Length: 381
Image 1 (cartoon, one colour):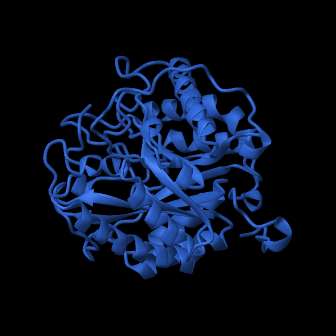
Image 2: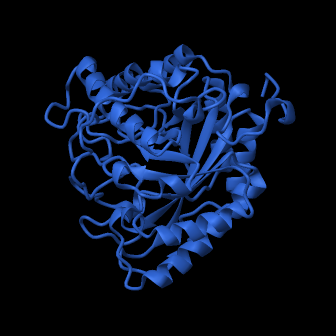
Image 3: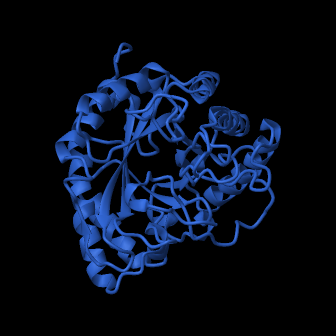
């Protein structure tokens, strides 16, 4: 599988360094033991990719639109940077990152609009080689790298605490760090001493079954950029749905194995003819035109495979976030990106939310306070 061609300018959807696919196993039972089920209504959300922000009003307006189309959740994806995959220093770059105040404003606006919130920091590589991305980092000194990572995570944790986010994601697609369980354990212990919400980690789509830190977090999360039809990118919706059902059952099996609710942090497709084959690759080759219908077909397949499972009262699935809501682009003919505003995919998503039928005020995290202790969200947001 190809690597990101320019991660320094990438969205979080970019994935690479494939390993062998998850082993095919029998599907889990239709229902799960009561101890594993998720209380309350499922998360039906969108992601916002918050890099450097010149006009905060565009992001706040995007939060409003997300609430208006029937979503009940927002995940804010925001970067920290290391220069190369072998670098030991992770940095906040003012020219490429939002300010803490901007992130707080976006998350606060989401709360005001009755959206449950997740903060997801990601590592981006400033100067990547051909196949370099955060999944293959190999710092010259792991101790120094972890000290730097801890410092940046503490910065994002300050924002999460101030914004009272419902879920905090401690890392995303950091494949080479995942075997270092003691490091992650120390980070999680420190976070729990200050943060009372739900803690999760987001694994890459091609190795979630190899992650061993699931017992340490509250929720098993996955970036779901599965290659549905690698050899047939123009496959019909039914074939794409069947491919999603297979991946869905594997995901549920691993979640059941670790007795953790499952959350899809990102599911998204670029408006490219290759959307079903390589949803992680958003870079349009020269001369390739936007294909909004290909994006819409992929979302139809996703909802076809997941809607019934997500909507069950005894479901193991916490919910999902569609990647993503683009504050800048709105479906023009040249818009080949992941954004869905102004594209046919938005109608598919809105209809999917409606069919699952979840009021925003009912969203609950696995460790949520009882309804009698929580402040109700006004119907008008």
